[in-house]
Image 1 (cartoon, rainbow, N blue to C red):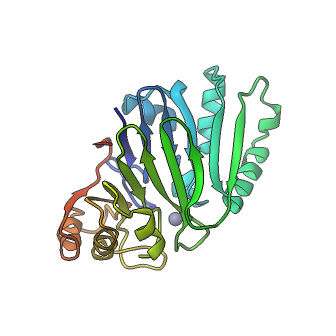
Image 2: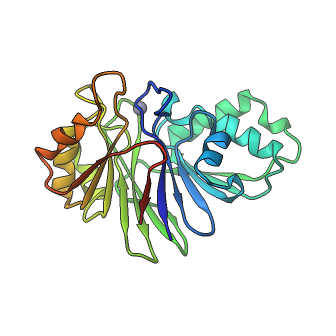
Image 3: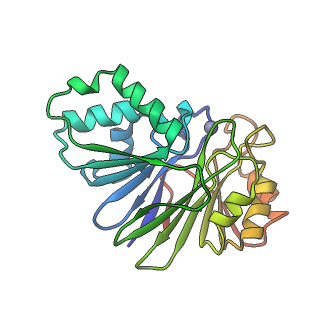
Length: 251
Ligand SMILES: [Zn+2]
């Protein structure tokens, strides 16, 4: 069984019930993470995920509310005796900055550090980033304030498709990533540059022919976020859910 486990749903400012937006995609054997914030080892434990099964980490873009905990995760895994390879995927500027950050923490001098492989992805539509016996994952650049990627995850044994918008203004690239998707996780930050209001997330889901829309990366300080579902309903006739921390979505 493959499932998405939502690890955070907030926009850049988190609160007690909403960590910054990130999630895991878990199969029986292993799990992947999309972005890495907060205190990852604690979060993974709370979500029932065994950190030893982390194989792949996608970094969507180099904003602190998406990647700030990568050094903590890597250091903690090292201290816990982790030995398995971890693949990290992202655009060139994202991974260049991450490598510089890790260098600043002196990771070259961490003895017996487990292998980490950086996979630098081109800023091209539908780049095949990962393909193995379980998943086929494509990335496309989206329209954010800095270089950023959205994802399309094809689960090979179930045939299910998950798409994730990342932080973006409404765009064609996400419609393509989400074409025929069973689940589209779309940001709903609101009407600000490089972001999307819920009604536009609904429009993208509708144009993509997605079946289920999950709203994420929302403002927890301004009113009731459940109103976002009503807003998205004006443009999307399918199922709409407000993503919540620790929610699970079967794929
Ligand atoms: Zn961002």
